[in-house]
Image (cartoon, rainbow over all chains, first blue to last red; front, side):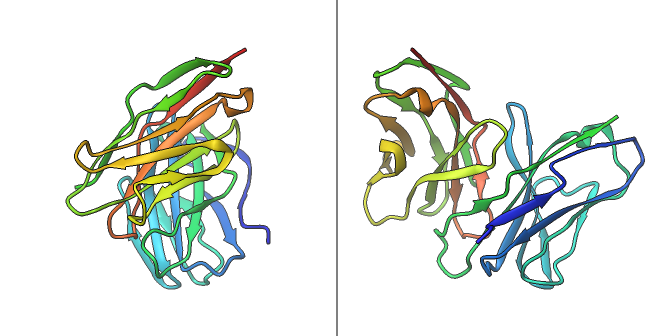
Amino acid sequence: NAGVTQTPKFRILKIGQSMTLQCTQDMNHNYMYWYRQDPGMGLKLIYYSVGAGITDKGEVPNGYNVSRSTTEDFPLRLELAAPSQTSVYFCASRPGGLNYNEQFFGPGTRLTVL
Amino acid sequence: AQSVTQLGSHVSVSEGALVLLRCNYSSSVPPYLFWYVQYPNQGLQLLLKYTSAATLVKGINGFEAEFKKSETSFHLTKPSAHMSDAAEYFCAVSERGNQFYFGTGTSLTVIP
């Protein structure tokens, strides 16, 4: 199993540009998450999904959109990039069922908006 | 509301010394608690988790943590630090399972 994969690894955007961060998991997990990590701030939840076709906002959803058309994929869309969106983005997944099942993380996407 | 506080954003220990990383949580119901480790330029990996089965939880790489309800704490310890333990450590809490709340992290430096 590849686990959770994210593409691209690095990206530089200009203000106002758009992009999609890709996330795929091959563990048949129901739950998927997008976080951003800023220095000294820990991880903040952007959006999450409890299954295909179901998404919900986290703590910091403004400026982002998501979709979940399949169990495997959970892309994150930035429509109008802003410098405040410079961050490292992590995708994670976990099985459903037991509430204490841990999350499995991807390697991250480092995004810079100039 | 859930929250996690990690005291000490940076901790330095000598190789072979005790590692103690602090985590306090707030939760309105019995929580599930997790410690994750992040090595440079990598994603987070699970070290250990508390699921209410036992208050002392043993994890990978010789780490363990004790759940203390009276102190609302879940501190991470390791008896003897190794150079390879240098990393960022995150405590996280979950009540209902849908969302996890992470602390701001503690960067561990191991001095040879």
